[in-house]
Image 1 (cartoon, rainbow, N blue to C red):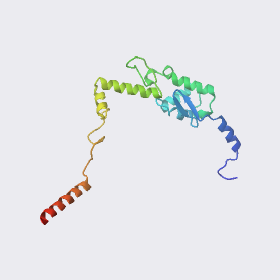
Image 2: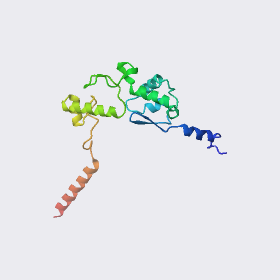
Image 3: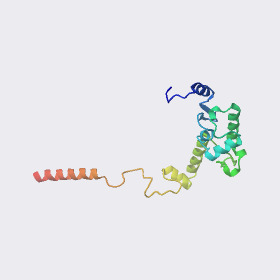
Image 4: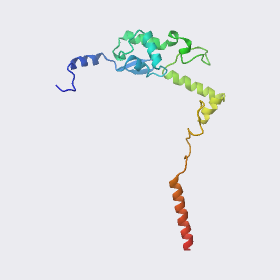
Length: 179
């Protein structure tokens, strides 16, 4: 028996049959081989702290592999993720007092990207300071721009170009002297 093969290989094959490699929550496929907390934190809009609270609220072991959970446990996690704003205080959600609806909600997955894009477009349309910065492609959140974030042109001195120009000038001057 080699060192690479475990002694109880048939048990490992049986465990692989029970494992779901992808667990679908909302519009996101989660890696079924990871722990519940780590897999949930891969979703947009859910970080480590939120993932821990989701697992705790759904009464699921946060260190258990999400692909090996029963369907009831997965349904409990899905329910908590979809209704997260009902299970936590208002200050903990990521969308407080929405501009259009006035509601407080926690948005995850592709909906988060869509809402962010709408917010940026609204800022651009009303020409707010942040909207103007977005239009110009400049930094929006007050970062330094004097020394960083330069995207156009070369910075500093291009020595090779200067040497080539000097060589061309010297060649032209040498031709003029020969005539």
